[in-house]
Length: 339
Image (cartoon, rainbow, N blue to C red; front, side, top):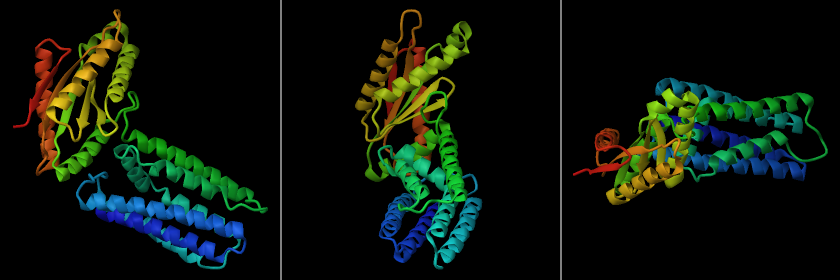
């Protein structure tokens, strides 16, 4: 993964170089200011990729691609296209041509690999504005430099196509990590986020906790009230769990009617208190005609060596506690501390 994100950083560095060249050659003051602004955006993108490189070096970045070698080859191909654009950008350019080259550069950088890495960062670092900032940068590029001149109809059409591509890529990459029905992470996104946060916890030697949450008697909603009602229960439960948790917590749909919550920097007592808060909130949100309750198993401990293996062990222990909660009558919390 480190080689992939390092190459992504290099590509945005080359994009910055092209925009700096355009700024240096621009005669119109407003155009010069515009290209400097676009180059400044790329500096922020470079900083983002440096964070990703550091995360990969600390082994906190999970393998997001099935075949990393093939992915790296794809990125190398994109990099060669960028080098060709950069070489062409060094030649004297009129404004229309410079804008067209900038469009070509941005559409090249919209490769799905880069977008998937952006989306991954977005689900893990929830307060980091980098993902939305990239959309703002793209709109600045597609609007073109200010001035009396106008973009040709062909360039405007290309700009509209790039906007549509960006919108489509955002939706597709989001669905690769998020459960469409409930809005929480799907199993893939859940494990990627847990691995990253688990590596942070290992470095800081802080306790983590895992909750396995199961909707009690879920089958009856589908059998007696229909699958649309079952879907509604899943959706409402996912939203309730998300509302009860912190921004730093990871919430995902483990499968079927089961949800998982991963809480970093959390003692067992705090994890049990949070689990009880979730249980009570779900029960309170129900009504007499449709009572929804959940059973929750909680496991807590330190991650010390093999983060993924130890995380799997935590999940298994939380699952055992969930089994006990259901065996003891459901609608309750059972926890187990790692000894």
